[in-house]
Image (cartoon, helix red, strand yellow):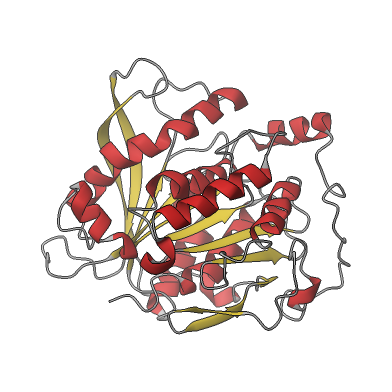
Length: 354
């Protein structure tokens, strides 16, 4: 049986049933279980919005269609590598942005790749921040052995550069973890990210930021990525809305933008309007950005991702160089799908960056 990702997911499925927001309500064609991840064409992709079979994205030296299917990681990628990275706990001071602004202690877990030497300040590393879903916690991505192995093998095999990975949380010691309270927490997370988490991580570990000042974080944005699953995906979209000055690469997995609206009131057009204006106002076409948006065809909350993708793909500004939408055929709202999204997306990040 597939393992669900995040301890509150069963409650989420109950909410889905109550709200009647499940499979078959997306207004798009359902796919046969006989379809193959590797052989399905881009024209068949749900939420494509337009035919994208011949549209390709030049993300550095990688080219993929704008819409398509993810491929499963080979079995060898989830086995223990001879070159294993390390995971350490990082406690850092932050603020309780949801309540009274009081000083609190938060925790993140940081993966450093094989060969990382804290005494070697000359070697710099790209960095990826990852966010869990509802009911999750810091360090969750590293608790699944196969995913830790995936990171090790992607680096060892040269598919991605040696990478620092941070498994953070939008919760804190005062947090309530019901669904409504969780929404409040992730809406405030960008403040923690800007003012506390990023400085705590990047002052200690050797990223491309020369310091944790806003100026140096902005100067190193090409070497910084953010991704998340479920409510972590929603958090990822909000990170794009608030922190695109500091982050170039984004991986929202099974979730849409809730800058306007919330669960059940998604306001796709209004949110995409906002993102489009943001790209124009911040000149992101020239500065560079890339969003790899992913969801499974059997994901219980896939409709919000599919409908978000449909709206994104109607806008000429979101070219394949900047936005792609990929699905895992038969993928559920679970950790197996997350692992596949990571395997497919991460080799496209940090390409062509000096």
